[in-house]
Image (tube, helix red, strand yellow):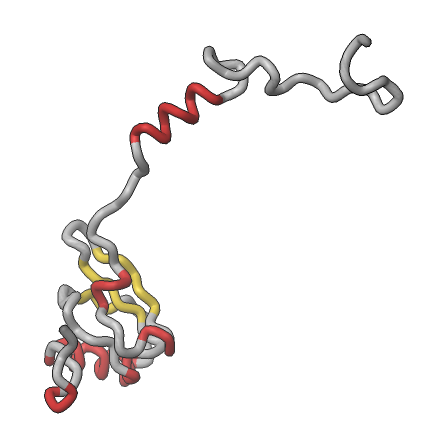
Length: 119
């Protein structure tokens, strides 16, 4: 369920202070934050935030398209390495591996040769 419009977007107070300080100093350092629930405001465009994902701070460069979204959307907390069955299928289907099809890797017939074999 979305947040009520009359309440306005949620942003932690310390985040606004850090962003204002970074803008006034003119430095382009990464602003380390832990507030994944805060909404990205137009004042944050052009700044780089380090959003904590539970292990490390993921650098997020804020652009115009990100305004209205939450910081947590741009720093995933889980990493997907793929399905184990996909790795098994790749290994079995690799050329030269046992179980690879015999027709794979065979040379194409010469341009002048008749198609269809020796007949």
